[in-house]
Length: 324
Image 1 (tube, helix red, strand yellow):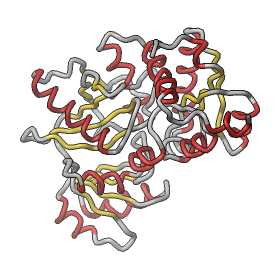
Image 2: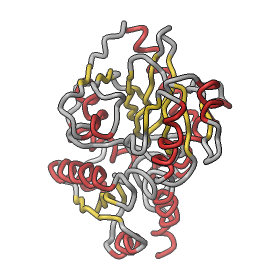
Image 3: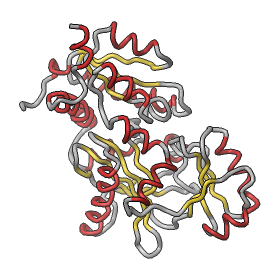
């Protein structure tokens, strides 16, 4: 099909905000995307999603497609994707199942283990879990994290078994299962995915104990290396692994896969993000720039995927068919 022009998108809703712990980051990401779409002539409007009334606004406002910039629960976990499917409205990014799996770190790790993709060993922490047993099984240090949050919220590096109960309690405040994960001591990489291909890898370097929320969104001390410093064949190997993880989940459109390499050079999949950040500190725009693509073009290409999928019989016809 011909490349879309601005009028092909119709009236576009940029969904942002939401009610998750990542609300503030989502608002920043959504504002950046909204501005980029408007610069390209798209009839785009921001909607702060805080409840079911947003769905009414989508229908009554005559919107034809949605650009999802909701991070965390309610927006990145399949909930809003399911609502948009019911409305028959095309939307950016992954569908219901891939979104739900990627957002749930426990189910995602179980899935990767089942399809023989490398992910660090883990245990679920219950209130009565024996810290000494966890330390003996996974080794120290280790990472404790909530299974249902992103942006490194609720995560703690644990260096002694006595620290595990407090770390579990901090993660449990976010709800859902809590994981203890084997610490991978080595360089951290991220691979942005766009339209079925891998963008250049970025190697992350931070003086923090790990790439936490402050390092991601606030600190000026985090360093982003792109080119990542790997030999071309090694970078290609990690890109293939990232794409294998992304595709195994059934993810589509765009996203980001985070990986780490241990001291022996073995790569490990940490997580898949189906709605990555799009702020001035975010990684996908950095990778796009390294590939010769500015922010506005990146946003345009993400939105263009909704036209291609609708044309191929994806979400997009239901509400118009039902309303005549």
